[in-house]
Image 1 (cartoon, rainbow, N blue to C red):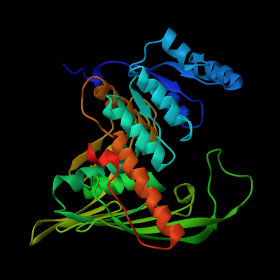
Image 2: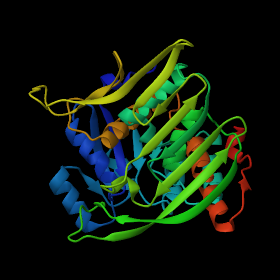
Image 3: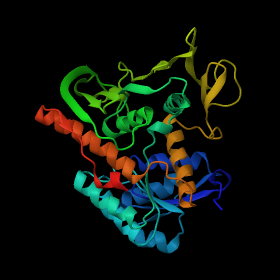
Length: 364
């Protein structure tokens, strides 16, 4: 019998102490009834002291010590792509379920080797969270509902490489189909916004590299368009267009036909409490479209950003997977998205159209 992860505390470990690892730390702090970090592995003595002092999390210098003194349900591998494969391989060899950060490996050869582990029974999922963010999740829900009819084309401009590709694949309901890719790179100057460390002390003009690619899957197509640091700039906006034969979603505007005489139109509205006299608290409540909730945030007891809500969802789905439930974002999916991103880069570098080929993970 599969345990319902939503009704029990999820206990997990973390390997890594970088910027991404802090997302998991914040989620566990905000939702202590749902999540518990039993330990974190870092080789940095300075970070070890800081994490134990600020977050109250026990740290270990080695994976062996983490597993000797704790019993995590799974381990989050939150390290760089160059280091992740060796750690994932080590954990898989001793039967520890793994939730890997993106990318799970830096190149095609590394992805091929990692996917051999799943054929041997390793339980690996990847923490690709963007499709679980409230607004993206709402768009995907509507697209898969049939209201828009058959989805044939999407345009995605909100994040780089495999992150954006994971969204466009889900919107098109593409699995491992091959694509003809034509891509180019231009520069797109703009005044930079805040980075990971906040806003700079003076105005900075960024000559951003902008990648534009057309992915032709035959009867379906996608346009990928992203400029460096676009998602952090005050003066740039993200754009999503989803087109079906009976309707479309343009950013937050939904249009579809109830019947050929009756067009329906509404806006997707992200409801945030604590504003205009509301006294429920301050959190993202969900996404409303027309007369119904398209997405409802299950984590309203904590103050989480959209990204943190999505990562918390990954953690819950990982627990369900560990308990025998379905895969939610497999290593094969992550590999395909990373591979398509690499092929976009190849098209840019060679200035030629490229055609993808089935990789080993497509044949499972």
